[in-house]
Length: 414
Ligand code: HEC
Ligand code: HEC
Image (tube, rainbow, N blue to C red; front, top):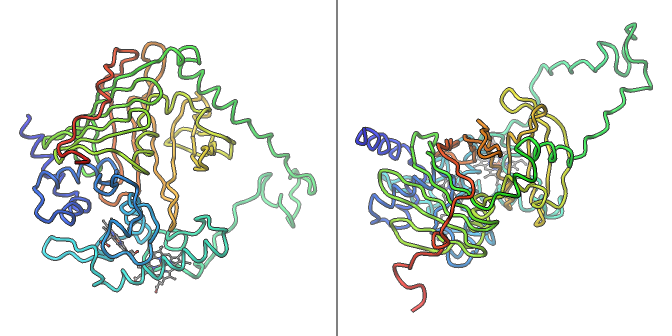
């Protein structure tokens, strides 16, 4: 049984070529162990730790041949490259060369890479000059998954959908009897306050009093990537800002933790501190009250409409965090549960979305938690991954030592 699983993982790793090669690029002599871990990071949709140095450096100080993305945080290079590839509907090899299995990302061999540089300049200029520096226009705005964006509308045009109130009910209509009289459009329903939706959610998962009793939580389960890679997963959370996670494959173990304002990560290559964008992202996503105390995470929330999530009707809330990042929350219109949470990484060349869908809510000591979470990310190697939890425990004793950074292999400062 174990052997079969192992072989399955090895095959899966071989498929996750896109990110595997990144570690090759950095350490050409790297062992296969490092490659396995690159695949693991890929499956989790995370940048490799080597991309986030001790300080969040601008990308041009970390990579070899940066001419236009200057000033971008180094941790954004892989998300942005995946966004380029996804915008084109292609993979890394559309712009980069692979010589006998070795990627040379710094080489300017392919004309597409230089075209992409011209495009980056275009995007930076239009956002600076027309949109006050906001990343309103990105590669996807025009490309939409095609290397040659469609610039001319397709004929014939689709017939506009009939207005509410039946055919002819709209402006200039033939006046079907019984249609809405012109000049008195259907009154817009009064918008539902976002607070009501969040309160309904709190009640649906067990109520504020039950949530307030939660001090710690442990979880165990598995994560399966779209490439088939399977990981064992464990998490220990304590209080608002302590979280430990462990990911295990047949090849080894990766651990990481948030401990207040610091964080660390340990894999077979060593231990390093989490910093910059990577620390912020992991802290945001791994701590206990992420989906339990929603209101305190936002400065503004408003209901913007409805949509379907799977076969469920959902009410959408747009929420803004204190650092002005936007999120979208989808709540089940009927039972009030949180169905989907979307976050957006704003970069200078476009906004990169990430999505988590929450399924299979079950009661644990009076509070409902999703036992399945499906994440989707702009990650051409592993577009989705599914976390299935076997066990959630509330308020177990969690030893504080779990969150302490293990001794570094080489001392950080001599
Ligand atoms: C549409 C073209 C395009 C695609 C697709 C693309 N890249 Fe790039 N990549 C670029 C450009 C352009 C640069 C250089 C940016 C600059 O000069 O500021 C670059 C730079 C890089 C660098 C830095 C190289 C160095 O040492 O300077 C890495 C690493 C990289 N890309 C990885 C990837 C990966 C991995 C993928 C696939 C997930 C990918 N790229 C997909 C266009 C692309
Ligand atoms: C304002 C619209 C627009 C934006 C924004 C835009 N592009 Fe383009 N892009 C085009 C058009 C138009 C072409 C030319 C297509 C053709 O020749 O058929 C093109 C061509 C390209 C090509 C060459 C494709 C090929 O087949 O040779 C690449 C690579 C490219 N864009 C990358 C990017 C990247 C990366 C971004 C974001 C940094 C971006 N583009 C943003 C409109 C845009």
